[in-house]
Image (tube, rainbow over all chains, first blue to last red; front, side):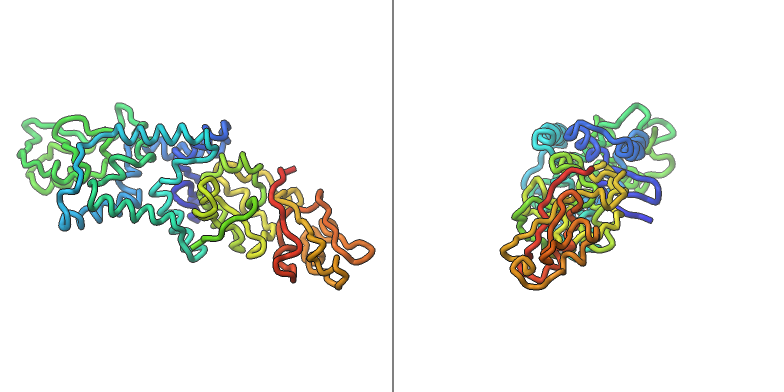
Amino acid sequence: MLMGTLYSFAVGPVWITDPLSGLQVIISALAADRILLLSMVIPIVFALVFGRVFCGWICPQNTISELFDSLAARIMPKRLLNPSPSSKIRYMIMGLLLIVTPLLGFPVANLISAPGIISVQAANYIYVGSVGIELGLIGVIVLSEIFLVRRLWCNYVCPQGAFLGLFRIGKTMKVVYKEDEEHVCGQCFECAKACQFGLNPMGGKIYPLCHNCGDCITACERMNQGEKPLAFRF
Amino acid sequence: MQAIRMSRKPVRPPGALSEKDFLSKCIRCGKCLQVCPYKSIQMAGFFDGIRVMGSPVIRPRETPCYLCMKCPPVCPSGALDRTVKDKKKVRMGTADINKKECLAWQDTLCRSCYQSCPIFDQAITMDENLRPVVDEEKCVGCGICENVCPVDPPAIVVRAGGDNR
């Protein structure tokens, strides 16, 4: 039996809680209940092993943003603002929310958690038959991403993505670019073009911005013969 | 759209910690709302204030809590005390009778709240003049009395708050 939302859900006896929500409880109440801690283990281990795949494969905001990005490419390929990718702003926002949380005494970051809002309002609609005004935030995000900044939320705002990105160790799954005689790169740059975040997997530091969506690897498979120089590796 | 402004302290689901602790632990996940078979638990809206919005509330006049106790065990953060299983130990609030509006206290015959109270003949008793009296120690704050009161606005109202025993 599946019950809950992306803040916390249960699949039968297995409980899974969003680690950022759990952290906010810990710093706001200065107490950690054992069940809460246990329910944070699975998503944290997942992030340590696979990286930010919650963001890339599960998060509904990511799905919505990806879909509208393709649409936006037709309406307004160059947005109003085109800043270079930077995780600093995201971490500043996350830090600010985590400072304010114990001061105000409630989980402040959950007010702007896009996957949380989407899943809670979906549950609201199913169980109660109505939605709250909070869903408007998703509309604001979509419009901003079409006209203002490409993939604004994931790249520059989302505190959940910022937090999950902290769980990165040497062995965490990552996109690796390896060029040698067996792996030939045709220098087509289709991988960089495929990346909705504006990252270039061929060179430079793409983490913690990269959320392992795999679009670059798919693009590479489309263009090259033989062994691809781009792959997920641990 | 939920745009009902809360004019008083919110009535929380059974097992809830005191309001300050509750607000700091509740992650607004919605599991208690989903498990409630009566749809008594609703979500506070944006207009209820930023601190409260998204957290679970019970509006007894719309749908009271029927004390099935299905919600405390599902709370992931312990904002609802998972060990509260006995409905008599619940402290969602206390019923308060407005004697100027209550039909029985105004010398009309009425026993709606008394006979609907789930802590029957203990939380609400009838005095020798057939007027309802709330025992604050025994009242759990479920709001069934408020829900069935024939007066509008109801003459018996749950005052939220009160720690669990």
